[in-house]
Length: 410
Image (cartoon, rainbow, N blue to C red; front, side, top):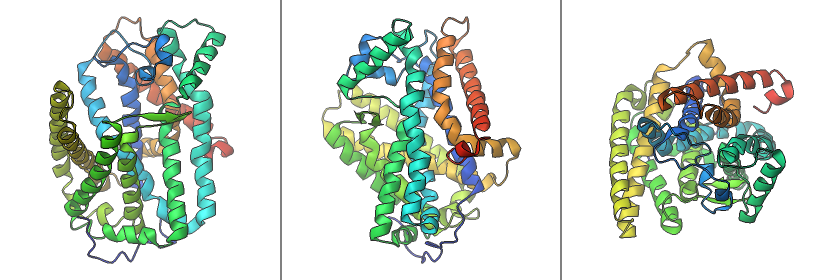
């Protein structure tokens, strides 16, 4: 399972670097994938057009498909399907990489305070301001009265469902929860990161051993939650939405990231001369094959209504874990191997990626709404929404970061 051969002498070094340029570029790239995901989702063949009546439905499908265009692009489903398998898991892993150097340098209280400001404050702004702004076009497309009072009434009606959708900002509150768990672990077991680091100590020489272990542990967590809740269920309490079936899976990736980062941000799995980076070409085809197998299994399970439940759930969760890890670490390998310095444009994208993540959703939905009647194909609309959303959220973030108080947060 996890490798544990070499002593993680580098783990727990309080002077460890808190930056890694290739991983910073990778985080920016995954952010771009998030933008593409939300830009294209309005043009999926199976998207269901929102209605005002649906706002009080427990399914809340309008949060998944805020805008639905009559122009459909089946090919977008391929990118969105692949994204959904791995990109948020990879985001949790990347976030975990930088926890240990920061936690050991700042201490538990300062680290927790920093995380509350950097994650909790943007989450509150996103839930209170950005999400209602983003979903207003969805309300209008569903036939809602075009005045803010009616919209406010519709939004407040969500309280009957104990819901206040925060859009993609759900990632922030869950990441904050994981960070605070890491703080508690640090207080109780001050060297827990070093212990996790030992698990990845042979990652440069035996990455398959480590990644296989990650597949098994994350898959077990995914299976346990999905057997209890049903496959890939979402739950919510107020603004705290989460894909509950993936919570343990995400936690495994986050704490795996802590271990890899504790061992060294340029060592083990992240070593540019290690086997993972040198064999970057091996992982992506394997991940895509696992995705195809998962898709086929899901369609087959759907055809028989997931009966019998246990074998289908085991198969789907196992294939999900394999595809997720393979796709995630194929990108880790590519960026560690090739992206030492990529120029000023990529450096700007890396600096502004967090703000792009926070701001892009409102831009995407409003642009989709504006293009509903445009005489364009779905492919053209999706391309326009993606490019414009990325540029606008990038420029807005760069502008906001000229204010020192905001720059300290995003």
